[in-house]
Image (cartoon, rainbow, N blue to C red):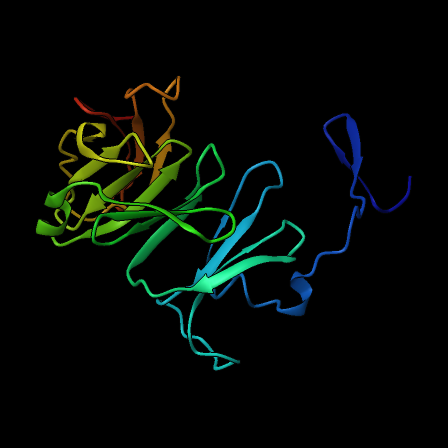
Amino acid sequence: MSSDWQKLADTWYRKREVYTTHWADEPERLHLSVVAGAPYGGPVATVRDEHVFQPVRGSLKPELQTWSSAGRLIKSTPWVHTGLLTMGWSAQETLICVFESGIVRTFTVMCEPLHVFTVDERIKAEGGAILASVWPTGVALLTRRLSLFVNTSVVRSGDACFRCADLKVPSAPLCLCVLPPPSPDSADVQVVVGTAEGPALLVSRHEVRDF
């Protein structure tokens, strides 16, 4: 067997180069940015990570940029927003940007703005959000007072938003991961919460389970 083949269980695999990526031109780009990659080899979005020290290189004005999966620039636009928590892609390949203030902004692949809405005014009253997670049809946010809000739409709030059961944890969790509902129009959303104390919690609208 050639040295580029690797065995996994009873099957042999090897990597083949399909095309040359362009990321090599700026190897630090992905490490210095908030990054969201669409599934199935779709577009990749990047924006400057304001929480990471950035070496001065070119223009100091941050940009929202979209790329092909091979690292070829699709489009860019000036980025005037602050407090970005996370980004992700919807089922329709629109970019979802979630902010500490509880605001959600969406953009097309060509970086054109689409929708802007606030998930819940209580998020700002609770000191803003500290963690967020995106799935193809919604977002989840955790506030500084450890309240978990779920919004089952990426175009509006209102009746699409609900507050989950009280986490009852002594300190801020480490991470969130949303388990998407069984169908796009379902509100049966569960969130896996990783705690600093060790337990992983399964949180829904009505209950919190330690599993």
